[in-house]
Image (tube, rainbow, N blue to C red; front, side, top):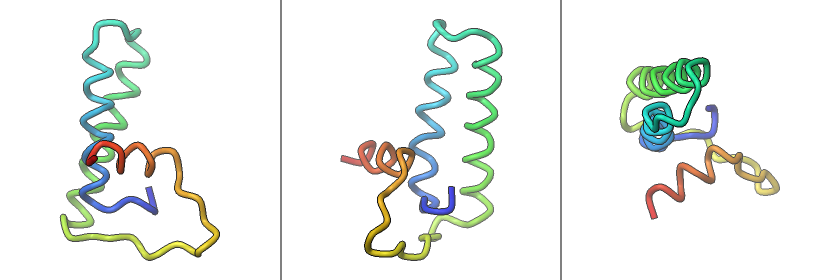
Length: 74
């Protein structure tokens, strides 16, 4: 989470919520996905909408979550 902006946290939260409501997910994973959803939304609210994480080092590769969050805005 330390490399996502507040806005980027909301995209995966929506995605996880959609997966939880798909009807193809077992109850344990539904609870897990909804927990991730609530956690991301709460964190985004705490850091405020204008939060942008510090710039990573030049040789740093983005996390999978960061990649997915960026793809959601394309």
